[in-house]
Length: 564
Image 1 (tube, one colour):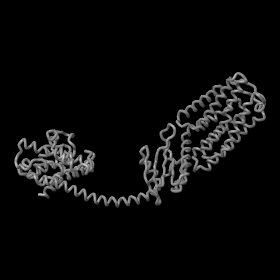
Image 2 (image 1 turned 30 degrees about the vertical axis):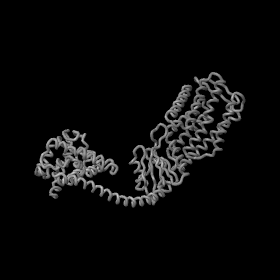
Image 3 (image 1 turned 90 degrees about the vertical axis):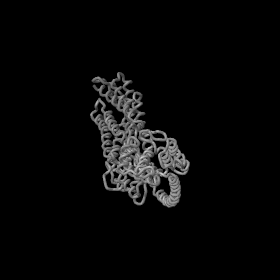
Image 4 (image 1 turned 135 degrees about the vertical axis):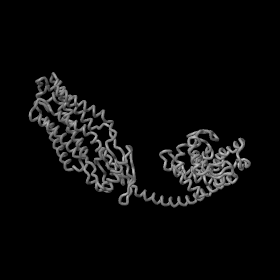
């Protein structure tokens, strides 16, 4: 039964060691050393229990002492990390040397009486153990255990005193870890038990540390961050876990936001109406996009660039957040001065540019009106269709989700509308000014104006206007006579093959032709014109755009009535 007990403790130690190694990409040396030494200790216990000779039992005893001698200093190092205590390197060397001296005397077992005067193999109840007579140097091991017990108990009291900086969970973990290790040792010595329960205390400690592993690494990570940042001016950090519990912050940011000094480590950041909580903590976390979020804040006349990002460790995707503060006050003042200068400069440039653009637009519009003056049939057509497109575009701005037209695009279409018939400048006067119906040859000549218009627009605007506007203007000129059913000209495109700007222009162009008097026809009434337009939806016009155009009826009637 005892042999099985030792075997189970060994198996448990091996499994937990493997878990630590597999669970984390970045393996912590102290934790791995703790697990390995415990496994060695348990292996020695089990080997001794199944030994059949004194020599084998002594060797097993030496192996278990490897763990027994070096586990206490490893626990000491882990606890100092939990308490964020810096220990003098010479004291660490002393502890390691002490354990090594004890191990040296253990290795003399079987050769002299320094550690054990004599050993005898005893087999009872299915397991083997050594009956020992202690030598003069055996006292070193109990002395080592007393030394570590006193130091670790003092650390527990230190952690309780520093409970604002050291989490309660850390204090509890340390208390259980220390008591489980040393109480089992004391119980074993006081009862003179033939069965060793000491490794059980270590296993309890291992379980606690595994549960707390990521948390401890997070404290280490935040401590390293703060340690680095403390050496830099105008940099501050706040570290939170993924449940918005406070982990750490450096002195610089505590000076900027003194309320941080009232926060408890490992406790949820207290809700408040403060600028730090509402604008920074809560504001950034609410906007967080699982990658990173940043903003610039102003407090007490100082500007900070605040950046929040994930804190990751090992195989876990995220264990918390790092909120970084960088003082940008000097830069902000400098940028403000530059911005003020640039604003004045831009205003002057915009004023002159606006004047130049206005002159250019007037030249293009004048050119279009000059072309229109050659056409005896369409007096005022350019100005009217331009206004119809403007009214239509304003209505379409409220339908962005349906059509995906941006305000910038619709402004370009409105600006391009006066150029839609610019190609008529290339049409022979005999055809252009003919008052009656065209022959087939004359109609073919007239249809050339769309392609000519696109060519002229490109020649006039290319290199002068924005590329996007040049393309819109070309499409308006080239495709505004295409029809939804594909029977238009010049290319016979249909439906959505026709650029949207040309489909918009087609509605305005035909509507003006219907309600305007021409030399070959009288103007249709508004009811007649809208009726014809509605009947042409899905044939001549885009039916969805046409529905929106029909909604402009009141504005269009008001415009035409005002300009009769």
